[in-house]
Length: 293
Figure 1 (tube, rainbow, N blue to C red):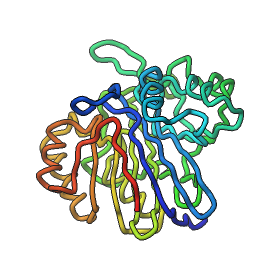
Figure 2: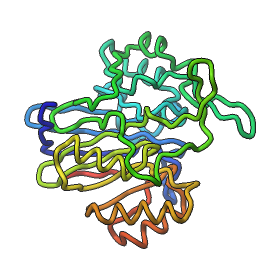
Figure 3: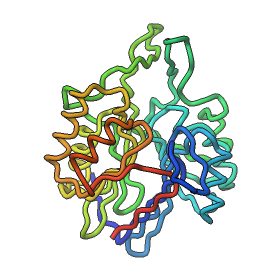
């Protein structure tokens, strides 16, 4: 694999998230969307990571922030869930180009559903099918391997499941060879940026693969052990106290400069992260901006 390279600067804007601050002008929604603006020498790129589930709210927030869809060069879909992918075809039509790279795992369009308390499809919706994305201008890059988006920004690819306490089934199902099976979310990928003098910034959607697994894979893929930040959802909302403790214990060992987590992280896990990391932790909310260096 080619050397990742480094960014001279990185700006991350939280376009959509479950929460908004007091007196915020933005709209919240269950889901996340981030805009990454990377600069590496003369190369610049604006990368959208996920689109939430409500394109009207997402576009409203973007307009309020003075961000216009046409600036988007590429879209990364971290996994199939509707609260990260719904409305992506609409957004592609707003971008109005024929060359917008959409990066995702090759299994992202599979059947994906829950059966409790009743059968409900929770994956990519019909209006955002592979065909609809391509009709709207997407150039699909579907791979389970790490994918370099620009010098200094890469995806994790399919994440190796190494820990014993992460990445188990949470009632999600798929169909393989005509049989209903637990869906372990092998399409879950994250984005890794390597910022000059700062280290790695890991941007997650839901961390279904487990945030410790993701972080270790990011270090391996980027060939860099210095971690500046983790930003996104950590999917600890239904985790046991033991799993939350194991997760935090392992994250503390990795010497992460700061973490901003929300969406599916859950209040209990946010509190425990805050207690463990102190000022190095902040809850995620719509409208936040992170600028490195």
